[in-house]
Length: 340
Image 1 (cartoon, helix red, strand yellow):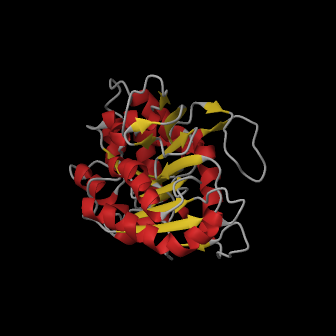
Image 2 (cartoon, rainbow, N blue to C red):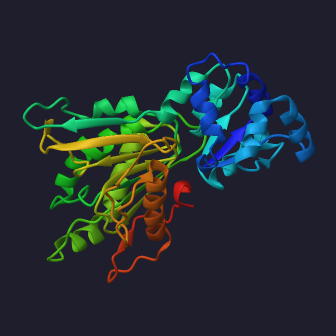
Image 3 (tube, rainbow, N blue to C red):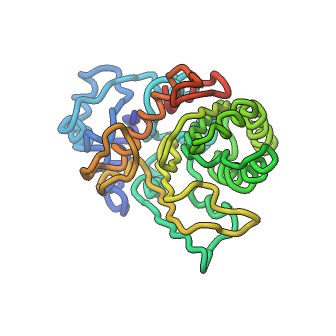
């Protein structure tokens, strides 16, 4: 993650010691594993001089040497800025933060908005039980909407119905209903969406079906989304196996014990758990349940899981599809900035 820090923010943040999130945000900025810090000082000499007067700037030097980019506040107003490098988080002392957040799908925090930092450290676990269902649709996902400009979803069963009509009905009630709650309400730049998955196919019936209907599925999804959102959405569907059910955004990892096809005719049809975790939640570690070429059995951070999942997705996104390989088809040539 690239963490852009305005020097004026650091001056005013130093005055907010009474805020309940001050210590946690200070620790977050100090940890080297949170990401590359980038400050808008003109020179290393200017940064070191300011650090003599501000212990928070000196603190940054204790963990890693920040990069300097005095022009990032100008560069961040161009779409190309968001297609380069890693996910971006801004600590920026400006009253236009809310507008930039809406324009670019990134989190902008100033010294008067430290409460936004609660998102960075809080995770949620929602159990689903058929015998006593709490929800009959994906509308509850609105609580997890956060600034983002790219999303990747992995699930082998999103297109696992036997004909196009059945798949469209399932897409309406699940995939599209879920995305409507997660995608930003507005954006100035384009949104990048990638779907990866391939139903278990022992007799070849799904491969032939998807080969013949992939364009129709792509067009159906993108047309329905564009009816709801006014900004441009670039979609790419990759027909490739991905056992675990995940959603990756610029800032979060959502995982599900079952396919994201939770509902059918507004009824929950499986028992499962849904977990939402921000990538910035670095204090908790656990044994992750996801598939890579070598199963990892050690405790790792949320960010490490997110990076490993993203790496597997990148391999498919950058590969050439082949009917005789695991990665068989793609619906477009759009590249996802999250996987670049």
